[in-house]
Amino acid sequence: MGQTASQCKPCSSADPTADTVKVNPASFPDPTDGSKQDELARDEETDQEERRRKEDQEAEEKLRQEAEERRLREEQLEKERLQAEQERLQAEQERLQAEQERRQAEEEEARRQAEIARKKAEEEEAERQRIEALRLEEEAAARKRLAQEQEEIAAAQKAVDDFLKSNGFKHLSLPKKAICGAPLSAVHMAVEKNNPALVQAMVRCNADLQQKGPAKKTPLEFAEQCNKGGSHDAVVKALKGES
Image (tube, rainbow, N blue to C red; front, side, top):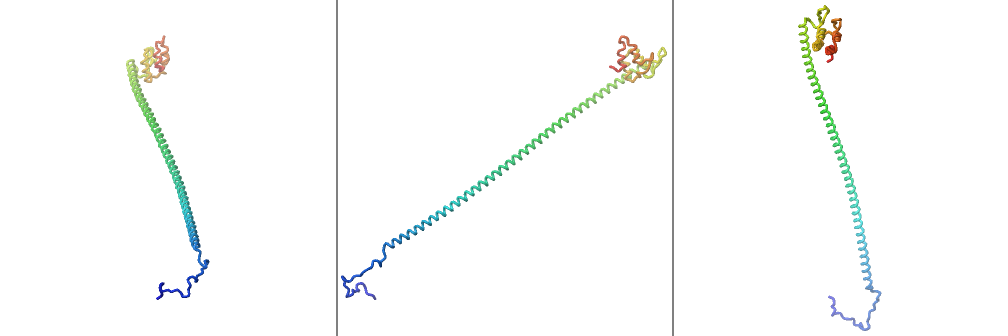
């Protein structure tokens, strides 16, 4: 075993007062050198941290700017999309409005044309009914006139027949001899009797108004000869067909 400190004995030749050890200060490191190196290391580390911090900040700022730019681009794109969508919707709304106005105009025109057609049909129907009413009125008036004319002809024929029978005439167109021996027709006798109604009845029954009678005169010539001071004016008018 080794010796302890109490067992260690100084060399017998050592002189405590004379024996000294010379130390070269240069052989020992300067205690301030380690502090400077530590400080330099710390400064370097601080600089590196500062650089890393700046780099991180710059990277973060760059990312933030890129994100902001993306957001702005996306917002711009979204804004443009919304604007385009709004324009599309506006155009679609205008198209629908124009289509609705066109349909309304077509419906209005159709209603107008239908109303025109309805009024025209009503006017045509009214005109047809008016014409039909006029036709019926004319037919009724014609039937009435015909019936009246037939009645008048029948009455005239009866009056003529009664006159022919009572005066010895066989027919309206067959004259008989007068007292003087000259032929005398029933018309000439009616003129001589100044009977305008009978003369008119004979005219209606188609008496021969060109037949010669006394003095070889027609019934009209005979009536004008007998007309003294307008005495036979009515007979003359009857022979002329004047009312």
